[in-house]
Structures are given as C-alpha cells and as structure tokens.
Length: 367
Image (cartoon, rainbow, N blue to C red; front, side, top):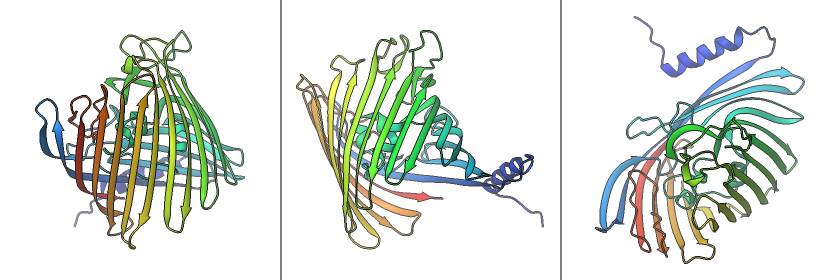
C-alpha cells in the first residue's frame, strides 16, 4: 500500500531538513499551530431600512490562522527563532490582511540580554493589551472602537524586549509600517523607507509590571502618514496617529477584572482626539463554562460624538482546544457616530446616533 504524508507533516519535515543541513551543532525544533473559528450571527437595525440579518462568517471569537514557528538552541543561553503566521477566512478560504504572512513574518535572537526581532511583527501596544483584553480580538471586541486592537502589526520593523522578574520593557521601530494597498487598516498603503525619512515611520514602547495577582500596563505608539492614498486620512508625513495606553488588572480567586484607557490623537480625522475607557471581567462558572463581560465607552473631545458598548460572552470548553460560544454585543451611538455592534463583514453599519444588537454563536478549534 502506498504511503501518504499529511501536508502539515510534510511541511514540518521540510523545515526540519533545512535546520539539519546547517553546519551548527545546536538542536532545533519546528511547530505548526493555528486556530479555526466559524459561527452564525444575527444583527438588527442595519442602515436606513433598519433591517435585520442572519449570516454565517468567521472570526467571531478569534481570527482563523495557521503558522509555522521554530527555534534553535545556539548554546550559552542564546536561541535563534522565527515565526510565520497566515490569517484566513474559514467561511471562504480567502487570505486575510492582504498578504500570505499578514499576521507575522519575523526572525530573531534571544538570550540573557533579552529578545531582538526583525520583520513584520507586533508593535509594543500589543503587549500592553494582552493582560487587559480578556474579551479577545473577535468581531464584537474593542476593535469596534479601535481597529488597532485587531491589527497591532507593522512591516519593516526591529524590536527589542526585556523581561526581568515582573517587569517587561520594550521598544520597536518600523521604517515603513505597511507596504500593502487595500484601503483598510490592514493594508494602509504606507510603504515608507523613502525620503522624507519620517514618511510612514512608526515607533512604540511598552512598560509593564505584573505580580501573581495584579499588574499595571502602559504603552505608546505613533504612526506617521505617507501620501495622498494612505488610509485613514494620514496623507502626509506631517500627520500622525498616536495612542497612549494605560491600564491595570487584578485577580481574586479564579476571577479576573481589568480596566484601561486609550487616549488617541488621529490627525487624519476632522475630530482627532478621543478617549476610550473600558472594563472587563472574566470568571469560571464551572470547570467548563466561563463568563466574560466587557463595558466600553468612547468619547471624542469637543464633540457630541460618543458611543458605549456592553458585551457578554459564555464559553463552553469541551477540551483545552475545542470550545463553543454565545456572545451578545449592544452598541449605542450619539452624535454623528455610527459604530456597529460587530465588525464582521460585510459591514452592518447602523444610522448615526442609533443603537445596534448583534448575537453570535460558533465553534473554535485550536491545533
């Protein structure tokens, strides 16, 4: 009988062969991993017709993706590592983020000195969000208010991170934050690496401290504009988009609560400055059921524009890798804002100043 090799095994073997061919005595390892997420959603109050809609889509709890990562022990406490991660829509199979390895493509070195990475990677804002954002990055998350929650990545970047005890500190610089042109946050048409030197640059820093049961987090990021076609109105290097993140979390027993503030100055908008306040809580009801709640409020300075959200999610874990979930998200807008209760596509934007409710159920499997 002819032997067949599964694609994942074949890829792993090929990558392992590349490592074994290098004239280095150190040992390496390769891992293939990913997440699959698909669900059904009901949304009301859509557009002028105030219509309701049922649909099936992906990414309600988390973006579907797969990746290949590996490391090699170089001795003396030093390691070389890489990570390639590709997002896709499970409902259609289409590649996400406008590129093959849109979720990450980087290589680096780590040791007692910390960790240095180069390539397309997370900004330092991501590491400030991690301990606070228990609701995740799905379609009913804080991405409703700030698309940076669902795409905290940049191209052409070099970063340095140091973790010592409970302290975490890091800096990152991108010489051209986004080479893709798709008219979205994930393809912003800002390749940079040109004169003037500030064009499409980005930098960020993070400084966090955590103990067993509590922590405080902070970060700052600034994106510089590029040219006429750059996304979000950042049509010149003299325009920028800045975010200051501050937050804290506390755990008592098995329950965790968090709170945070994002002060944003998005100079590409007519009303640039906004403050996003949020609180979250997560607690296990049984060994398999977890309940997570999110309360958020965004207010634009010197404006009537504001929006509030309340979201509640119940998650049942069949195992560590397979879960089903039920989520409800309610958004109320005031002024000229028309934020939806879900960011799933196609868009379900309500009328300015109105409210919307989205309810989803789905399944997530990690591998």
